[in-house]
Image 1: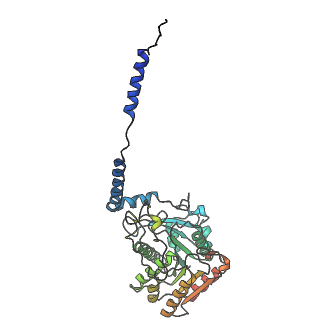
Image 2 (image 1 turned 135 degrees about the vertical axis):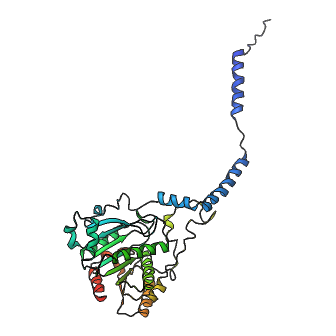
Image 3 (image 1 turned 90 degrees about the vertical axis):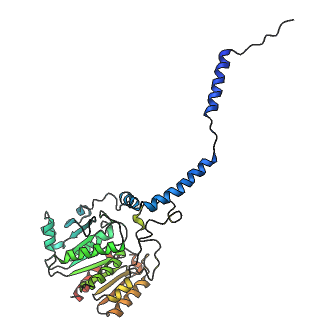
Length: 352
């Protein structure tokens, strides 16, 4: 009988298998759910703590990382937006605050303005042509299309125009607050008055700018000073209209979970803008401009503000022009209306 031959596994193969198995076992780690729980707790505790204890850090990131629109616009070079007789400069209303400002001279001075320095532009304010300070609405910068459109319109019809970016807007530094924006407007107004001689100075506020301009008007009234005239375009009223979100929420770096895990960064930045109460105190001529299809501020709000202003002064000093909804101007497009130059001219003439 033949013996059955059994082949033994070579020592080399068995030796090589053992270490491999052992090596694989050492690499396997058991999942421990407790670690994830601890990690989640740490996140939930640390993130709110950082937000509450280091607000200046959030402000820093807000200012450095927030998106600035329009994109790829050098605000120091207004000529790139066809504002060829416009100077760019910066003012300092408070320590640490720098305001970017455009000054556009009347088109009749366009040729003479070429190559001139800031001193020439400032001196030109006293040549007798009316001066407009345009206080724009929320978000963006002075380079927005409708803001450039207003500057061009006024210049074409013989007016000086100054368009600032409030603190936190455009290339201006600082954080936007109601008191801060009002301070910026007052500073620019006084800066202009110190240089314009006998030239009349008008303020044109659009949207958010209507709240800023009426705040500034009341502050000046306390000093015995009144605007030569005030245009309120697309005026809003916080008392009569509930704002869908905080006016300055665009400025802040929005951390996921704000409002649930911790207060919004802008929670302490209270807004009042008491336009209605301001109108009851004001003594200067006022012109309301509003589009019937305004998609931000319903026209009934402005009609009520108009009635408040009329009852405080009279229908001779307070005017309102409503633009047909069929024109499609919405909240920002009134500057395109062909009747607007004559409307402004009539307002300036009536305020003399």
